[in-house]
Structure formats: structure tokens, C-alpha cells
Length: 600
Image 1 (cartoon, rainbow, N blue to C red):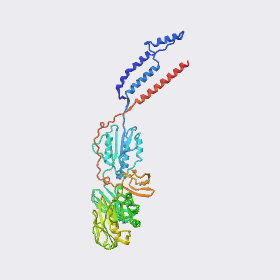
Image 2: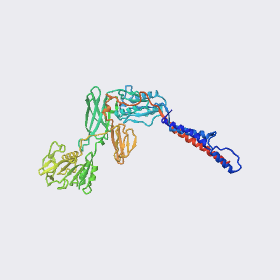
Image 3: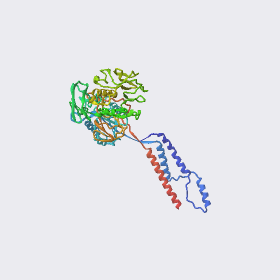
Image 4: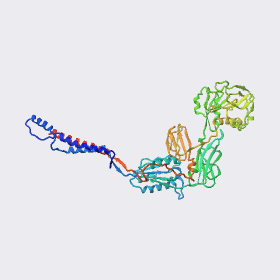
């Protein structure tokens, strides 16, 4: 026991003042008087006397105790007891799923060794449990003892998310600097760099292993309108010898294609899979097998390849409706009178047929046979009843694959020289296809009408139309999925998400979704239907298990090795409670005595 404010004990000097108060107070005595006047005179005379032998009753000792307790409360007493709390840090990152030589996973071995370490601790020691993935965090409040913590270990399992070694090192540094912790137990496949603090007990399970892994699994559409997709996979060889890695891709459970490559030690290569047939879910399987099966599998969904949203503005909306026959295209039609610049917000590409907007569109735009002398583009237009082509580039992506000699353009208009649009395809009377950039957006203008889209019925024009839209839509970008452990924003309209384990999570559009710790397919449901998202480990840094860097702790300023300062339990609240109880007790007895005297 100790005192935080021992100087307050000087106030014990006021205790004798209580005795003086009792000497000065009236000491009633029994007396027989013949009249009230004599009684009053005697009362006055006796009340003014000071001194004599004090008559100390029980209230005096009670008040003396209350006063002494008040001085003690001012001194702020505390009770010191030795403390031995324990912190347990469990690595539950994806790397703990590696199978060991005895058939157990690293995580199972770590749990077993943690149990043995806790059994050797004091049964009354409080235990705080921490997990490392996807970010280090405390698992609820502290447990009352090692036995309770061991029970909590039964419900743990490793995640598919990679760990954050830097964040884990920061947590261990903070724990090592906490002088109240008697011991820190760390179970991981990552060793602790020397010097290791004396209070920290590392339980290192497993060691470096050879591993083969799939990194990115991305899909793209080579050309607009193509029903097939192209897959891009990166595979890595984290072993000391060259290895032939094979990848087989299936779609909706059916085998589609496969490929292989000889990969040098520590090297990463990219495999291309063109012309994948349509499917909702694609699955890639890597062989040969290894001790870490999580990164031998990866998923992708066709929905990750973005649908091109086209806003079509024309007095002939049927021309725009024909574009819906192109795979990967969504069309919204407007007449010029109904068009508003706000319509551009939901579109990737705008097409204006026989019309031009009143202000420059802030998205990539195609102008089909624009009217002359508008205030925005100010085209110089020369109508013609028979278009005659004279020149076109053979290497440009817009004209690639188009047989211009088979094009039958018939009537149209020649476009004169423009300040910032250059003629890409020319005719006898001027430009027929102008292209240029403005304020970061692409703009095309044609003096002929490539619509309606007829597909194979007019193949040369259909190819040119697809090239025009592909140029404006910026095709060629690869759509990859999401990574485990990384949160994402719920799309608007989504009300529920089904995880790979089958759990249904109610969500709202715009909020952050963090339950992404499992690899697989997530189903996002809403009033308009459901979409699929692929979530993969996709982290070659986490898959490189041939070299495991140790966790380096910063130098912590704390107690001497093995020391844990005692815990101080303040006693002042209990002393104040005792004072209140004694005051109430005295008041109760004084009230009863007064009632008895009044009754007498």
C-alpha cells in the first residue's frame, strides 16, 4: 500500500481541534429547580463554562474517525499488487495456410504451440489476443486467464488475405514498449530480427518453401463487338530450379483452354489466352501443385470487362437502336429536343447524328454528318450526291481491317479544313473522317453515315463502325478483379452481397464493404439483378515464400528486461464511501435520540 499525496497527512494536526470543540460545548447535567427562571440562569451559567473533565461519547469517536478518513482520502492511498498480463499475437495471414511436412498447416502448428505457452503461465494472468490480418487488430476485450484465451483459439482460422509486415512490426514495437506486459507471445511464420526483447517469446512455425503462384488474372475485349475475351495471367516461379508451369482455364465449370511456359527461378512471365468463349465465371488452375494451394487458383468474371454506355442523339433514333446488336454495348437514345447535357454523365461515348450539341461534350464524341456553321465546331460542309474516296491510312487503329474499296458511301458531305480536327480519311471534295483531341477528350466527325449497324450484311462498314466506337471507348484496358483484404465501395443499387462462403451481408450503395477476406466469387444483388465480382490473393509478394524477411522491431524504451511494474488500485473511492456511510449512521442515531427526548 502507498500514498500518491503523502503531504496531505499533515492535516492530521487538525484532529485535536475536535477535542477542543467538545470541551467548549455545553455538557448537560441533571438539576432540580424551583422555577423556570432559575433553570434558565443555571443553563446560561453552565453553557458559558469552558474546561473540566471532557465527557467523550460515541459520536465523538465516530466524528474523529470520519475526520481521519477524510485526511486519508486527501492523501490518495492505493494498493499495489504485482501484475503479469500477457499479449498473444497470432499471425492469421494467407501465408499461414502453407502445409508443413507433417501434414498440418502452419496455422494449426502455431495454435498448438501457443496453447503450450499459455499453459505454463499464471492461471490468473489476463490475456489480450491480437490478430495480424488483414491489418493488426485486437480481438475483443482481454480474457480473464490463459484458459479462457485457449478456448478462444478454437474458433480462429487463417484468412485468404495477405498480412502487412510493417504494420505487424509497429504493433510488436508498441507491445514491447508497454511496461505493464509481463510477456508477449508471437506465433508466425516470420521470425523476429535480433535483438529480441526479453519479454517477447517468438513461436516460429515452418520455414522457407518453394512455391508457384498465379499473380494477376485479367480479362479484356480486343475489339468492340467481339463475343470472345482475352485473358492475361502472370505466373511466378519461387523455387531454386526452372519449372514448366501449366495453366488451365475453365468457364462456368467447363474446360476451355490451357497453356504452359518454362519459367526460370524467381522469374515472372505473362500468359495470353485469346478468344475465350463467353462465360460468367472463369477459373484458372496452376500446376504442378505445391504446399500453398491458395495462389494456385484464381477467378475472373466477364462482368469486369466494362460495358460501353453510348448516348445516341438523333432525329432518327432507330439508327442508334441498331447498335444494341453489338456485344458489350448499351445504348440510350434521345431526340435533339429531349437532349440535355446532364445525359452525358451516365455515358462513356456520345454520338450526335445530323445534329451537334450547344456546348462541347465533356466525353468522347462522334459527330455523324454534322450541320454546317454551328457555333461549337463550325464545320464547313459541302453536300455531295456521290462520295468518292481518295485517301486513307493503312496503319491507323480506326482504319485497321477496313477494305475501303468495298465501301459504298453514296451520298454525304465533304468536311472542309478544321482548326483542330485533322482529316484521317479524304475524298475528292475534302475530308470524310476527321479526328482530333480537345480538353482531354477524343472527337470524330464523319461526312457519311455508318449507321444503321448491319453486321455481316455490310461487313466493311461494320468493321469501320466498330473501330470508331473502339477508339472512342478506349478499348484495350484490362479488367482485373479485386484483392483479398482490400475493401471496396458498394455500387449504387446493391442491397446485399453473398460471400464465397455463402454468407449474405446486407449493404447499401456507397458504403465501404470490408468483408473481403476470402478468395472467390462475390455476388452483388439489387433490384435490377445481380452481378459477380472475383476476389483473388493476387499478391506475388505474399506468394514469395522462398525468402521470408524477419520482422524488425524498433528500439523500444521500456522497463528493464523481465520487469513489469505493479498495478496500483486507488483506494480513495472506497474511503469516501466509508465516510458517507459513517455520516449517514451518525445522522440516523442523532435523529432517533432527538425523537426520544421530544417524546419524553
